Length: 413
Image 1 (tube, rainbow, N blue to C red):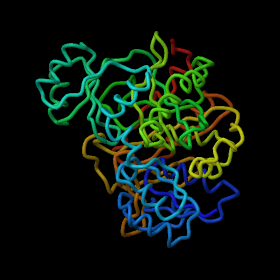
Image 2 (tube, rainbow, N blue to C red):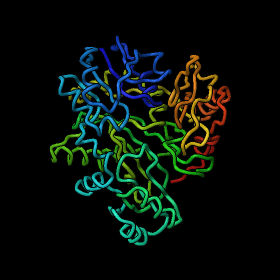
Image 3 (cartoon, rainbow, N blue to C red):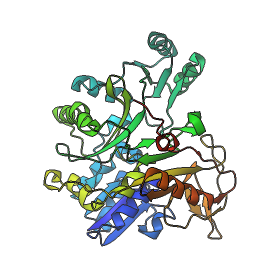
Image 4 (cartoon, rainbow, N blue to C red):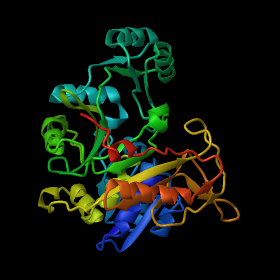
């Protein structure tokens, strides 16, 4: 199988590792890729959000399957352009990707499907936002209606901070705060059949103890031994299958990766958000544990044959990833700092580049996702932080408490 991977971040590096390990893949290309992905794939300098350019590259490479990593190309219609060329594509249409592209649309779909989620209000003015915030009370949850690279959400007890974020975003969704541990569940689907992956937990706040500003994610781990045994089955029944049915009813079936962000509330799992692609950094740990060949699974979803695909198999043990971010992230990051120690197995490149001298340098906010597996979570955690200790990046930021509460048994439902 000839595969073209679209994207340049840590999620795509993790996908490249998984795709290249599939015996059915005899050629892998990536556009635009990054220095880590270059170890596994032939890189092409094509803009990921240009549907015509991506489709033309897929034709040029005689690709059998195109895998789209980030959300922006999906919302831009890249999957539609690829499929129009008769090439299988893993990723939803632009119409279906609105589940991530518009929080208001996602809430509309969930309401129609009867999916358990938070009360919410769509707001276009500060006055509307203030009224909604006062109605729902603190903690205040304000979400940019559109794409914001995982950083469009503010959760705060400060009404003024909530209003400032609402005004900066323009159109927002104000939601009821959902208490309880948060869980990410990825579901591969061809629009009807589903193949749930292993639930994971990520860490959104910048600093230890869930302090500091919201980020795109500072670490993750799997599996979740503390989660209810029937969690995946219940979410499929109450959330995923009704949502897919509603999308089919609307004439915009969702095929690809449905990311379900959940809060495990006292009343059961409720949806915090949908994404239309693999999450980052959860992908790094989920794929590290997936035994089933990745390309075959994604191709089955892309070709409508997922029902014929066998059950997924998993490696024993646990996996954890720790994100190493650049100076000043999640503000405007400092880039161009030389990185040492990032060429080892398990170090996933997220925001890296080569400078004129060929040295590896930082090129984004989240620079690396340092990923390790172990016989148990404590072992995986020790291995991951040992890898982090070998990284040299001036001004680097990373959390030291990823998965610590789980290891110590301090997560309660």
